[in-house]
Amino acid sequence: MLPGLEPAELPADAIEVGRILDGWGIKGWFKVLPYSADPEALFSSRHWFLLPSEKGTKTFSGVAKLKIVEAKVHSDSVVACARDVADRNGADALRGARIFISRSSFPTVEKDEYYWVDLIGLAVVNREGIALGTVRELLSTGPQTVLVLDYQADGKTLERMIPFVSVYIDSVDLPGRRILVDWQADF
Image (tube, rainbow, N blue to C red; front, side):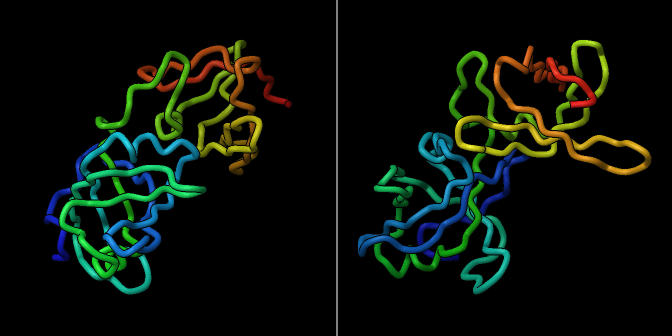
């Protein structure tokens, strides 16, 4: 196992939140590619769980835990340093590693704010009770986020998009796994 990494088990509620790009500087810092425009989960967790890169050179195997000392925004990227990763060589050895964080360590969201990962898989129903589909993914279009739904019609899986803005979203019921919308099936 590489310096700074401890063998670990992936938590049952682990969510992939980013990837280590490369070493940064000479003191063991590394660049991170966050999968979110707002990487608060990376900043709030002091334990990152790593899996080796899916392709390319693998410098470790299995699941490893990395103890984070500091993670921050620097210019247009995120950089971090970890305990016992002391130099550029140690940071470069982490290149490509996939970063997972326990969902329970994500920061608490405000009222009417949601993590995208919590919305994926929810059923979407309109005010008339018509099922519009299931959230497959979300897209950030700049000014707004869009729900991308899968639904069945004529034996085929089709796609429907609904802007995730308050004018169309009536409510999100996470425990009930449902989103109520003001949207028609023929839109």
